[in-house]
Amino acid sequence: MKRVQFEHSAVPYLFVAPQILIISIFFLWPAAQAVYQSFLLEDAFGMSSQFVWFRNFEDVLSSSSWTRSAIFTVVFSVLVSVLSIAISLFLAVRADEVVRGAKSYKTLLMWGYAIAPPVAGLLGNMLFNPLMGDLYMAFNSFGFEFNHIENANDAAFVVILIAVWKQVSVNFIFFLSGLQGIPKSVQEAATLDCKSPERRFWTITFPLLAPTTFFLLVINLTYAFFETFGIIDVSTKGSPGGSTATLVYKVYVDGFLGADLGGSSAQSVLLMIMVSVLTVFQFRFIERKVHY
Amino acid sequence: MYQSKWRIFTNHAILILGALFMIMPVWIAFASSTHTREFVFQNGLQFWPGEHFFENYGAILFDASATKGRVTALEMLFNSMVLGLGFAIGKVIISMMAAYAIVYFRFKLAVPLFWVVFSTLLLPLEVRIVPSYEVVASLGLLNTYTGLILPLIASATGTFFFRQFYRSVPDELLEAARLDGAGPIRFFIDILVPLSVTMIAAIFIIMFVVGWNQYLWPLLMTTDDQLYTIVIGIKQVYNSLYEGGQIPQFPKAFALTIMATIPPVLVVVVFQRMFVKGLVETEK
Image 1 (cartoon, one colour):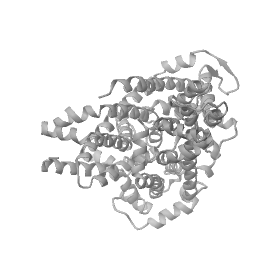
Image 2 (cartoon, each protein chain N blue to C red; image 1 turned 90 degrees about the vertical axis):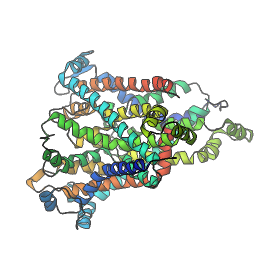
Image 3 (cartoon, each protein chain N blue to C red; image 1 turned 180 degrees about the vertical axis):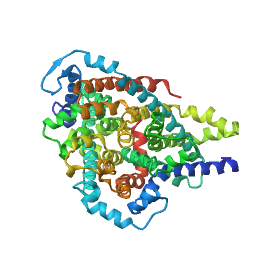
Image 4 (cartoon, each protein chain N blue to C red; image 1 turned 135 degrees about the vertical axis):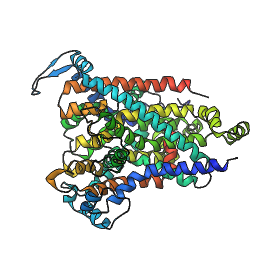
């Protein structure tokens, strides 16, 4: 906090008022609603509802479709995060080394940040279109018997590929600026001590980038949890049979298309708990442990 | 620094491959969007642009039937612009003010209010979509720009960016301003805002792109075609691709995709330096 501060009775309230007003109406109220509804059971016509304590939660947690979606979400998030971090770190290290064309490479690799998830979803969908998709045909001509419409693993592969493609540029920006923040003297000393670029990377550069990597891991996990909604909705739509539906996509499908308010709210509340844990983890653990 | 020839060669090879990996999907979409639908349907996706660029893009921009709805792509672009600008402007102003109160004032509710703001970071819009929709509906804000933009502003990321920035502003400035007899509002408008110009620009750029690319919320909120943003338009065109037993309109779907992509990409590339600075410095 500041050493010197204003002491005024009304002015600060005036300044926070717009933010607090918007948060109260569009955040606190709906969040409270979600918690409240998660304890209610509505009849089939939405005419009456009764308070059922934790029954919605029991139903959700014991349903096989939710468990499957939860497992898919975790596997999907970990794979997307690890793959996109690895690819962009690899590219950033090379982009940091080049002298000629460094600026052009940087621009060519970072513009993808601006692509909307559904745009990425549509592009991927077209490339895997059985009628004309180049990638679909390429995979099949190599004899893979690739069929993402019916095979759950192939569908997961498509969604993961699109999600990684969309996320590489963000990670690249962070890694490159992290690399450029390493002092020249350290890099030169490292070059004198070990000639092999690979060893130099693992013993000097990577440990120095550890804070960036952990930070990006959290960012990427949140991305895979929430922002991939647009990708899934325009590529697989969770098919085949809900096998590529993340938890967020399932909340949408059950709540909006299926009109199961209680169940969808219970899922929302479970998600809220998961995200809260992730955020607290980010603030508590990562900020303290990873420092050089 | 010493680099072997082989290392230099592989560096370039890897970076070119990486750039191609990023660009190829968009390039194929662009090339395919400049052919007739019959041609694309028979010959598959295209690597080289054809001769129907003006025809396809003109139809999408000005003829509502080409986008399978009652709005043209031009109107969708306008809606996206309103969403992007409204989101960015609203977020910058509201979070600058809130952060100012939190950092520069000692007042009773400061701590509880800070935690209310902080709590919004825990729960993104995606996990509370159904009740958010109900709230907006009960306020009669469905299919309005207000209902589209305000709920998105409720997340307090911007407030944290500015809080971080204000804390790095030297205390001496405030002391000096107070000696000169400047009140809190004066100090904010005449000293703090001018100091924050680069920060404001950087956050504005990021927020514009984020706002432009919103998908889930506009999808639920806008049942009226007139409010479709171009990102939502993509989904509509995609859904109606296989309708009516005609040859699918792939080129026009691609044309719409390209048009949705160009404005945010231009913003990011043109303001690259500012954008990267904002992204890297604020997210720490």
